[in-house]
Image 1 (cartoon, rainbow, N blue to C red):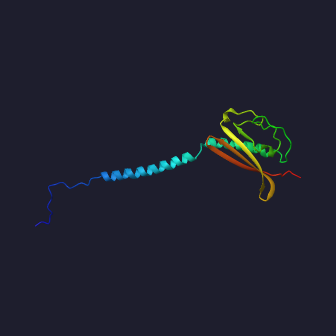
Image 2 (cartoon, rainbow, N blue to C red):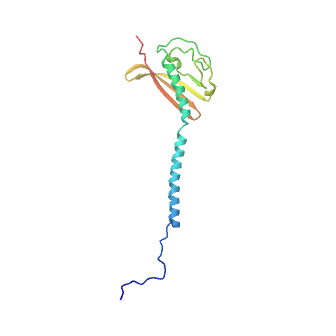
Image 3 (cartoon, rainbow, N blue to C red):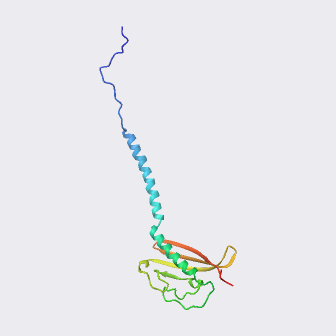
Length: 161
């Protein structure tokens, strides 16, 4: 006698490879929920973030005006009223308080057409800076459309008596 196992006339069963329908549906649902979350985060970021070029332009406008103001003398001096958006008669830091312009102008009042959609306003207030009384807090607000940028600087009477 032989210890041989009987052979089957049928071929051996092969394992089927691939996904079943429930597995494929589950994968689609999981990927859809993940993609929806990513798209929601992206939309929120885009809605709250401004165009970088717009932000850079507003910053350049505010920095230019801030430098102009901070280079003026601290002590108040008499001056004549400017015409339109000109700032050529401003001769001290305090003269800029309340300055506002729709459209950006050069110092002598020449409007810059490419910047006509921007607005700028300036506030100069007496304040105390790190225990130093009599400092001036300069706040420049630049806006365009729904975007706004605020730049704050300080000026003290460092060249005073």
